[in-house]
Image (cartoon, rainbow over all chains, first blue to last red; front, side):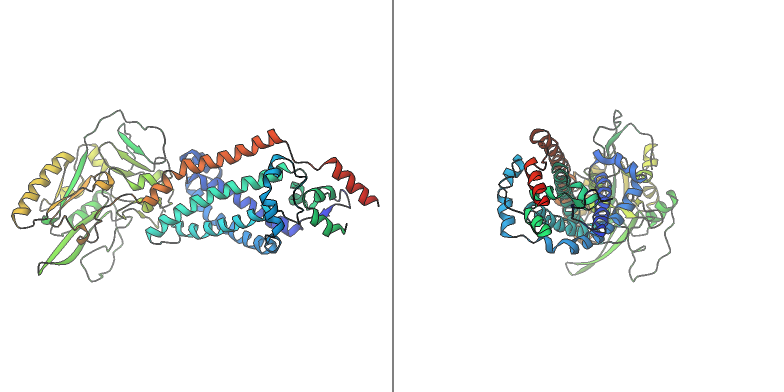
Length: 206
Length: 295
């Protein structure tokens, strides 16, 4: 399925599969978790076979997301170290949001925003995992003070993470030619040159 | 247990009013600790009326049996040995759901209709709607609900809502041989307690008083205590119980706030797209790359 042999490989098949395991478990977790958070979302329990099934499945999906995210974290952490150029990019993100990216600093495989998102997600994942265990009454029976604290942390970090993922998904929709990188692994050279110029140079030697 | 009812004061995870046209008098159970002899007839009556059997446990060296509330034992006698003014006092407290006016379990419960508070003050679990998350335990200031290992549902004292609904007193009241358990309207029970407290004061218990904690809006199970200034003496009865501020934060302001934040982020994306347009690769860059590739 090679559309253009000149396209650049951005993600390998195992990287994409790993990303989608995290992504699918996140979507299922958000839908099931929201039902337990506010009555507004209660009808979503029907997607999981009712309230009791939602309560049973949610924590197991959480374990799946935690494990698959750890794998993703190990794969990508070295690529997400913030550099000075990244901070310069972040400081000028307003221009980017306004739709004028011509003067943005040259970016490597990931820009400063993507990198910050990566670390913010890692922190949320950790908070959700630890606080989630505290709430998992089917297998853990922890002191009630800890459970109450865990409940607040779990709800707050989950809502924050849903916000982060919304930004992540929107960025992929907004920047045309991006989503294909996560579907079948490649991007066009022009895309790479415009959005990740120093990665483009590194990949093409130009 | 569900009874068709037109007098629902509160329903868990429900944002609109429940059927509530019917008026009801607030009821209360009064437990006079000073006249309780610890016979556990109330425990037996509770198992019998509700048709429950707990596992036969083992003696742990004290009179408490079973040692704690369970999904089958909705009330237990707790025996505390306390030294007061050089004398041993045996403080026996019948523990169980307090039927708070402001119940932490209802606040925390995510399942619509799994917990109902009736206008008469009874807080009742409707297990058929319970999903078994245990949030009621997290919300309860008295550590009362218990999750069943058999079916994963939460159980606790119903204040015999089925009996009270047809004008009967709870089973435990019927069984008490000393009159330590009384049941009636909350006002009547307060009046009765006042007499008991006056009597106790006369007999030298100067700190005798009624336990009807205002932190949870008062309760529909009240105690007459000889040492009302120190409820903790009675096997850790909380001095000033209230729904934890963390539970308020979790099930209060966080819910609408987080929902609003998520909605704002979503709509911000939509409106950004339709006002700024997509971020496409420019024609200029495309031409540059074509030229580079051709070279």
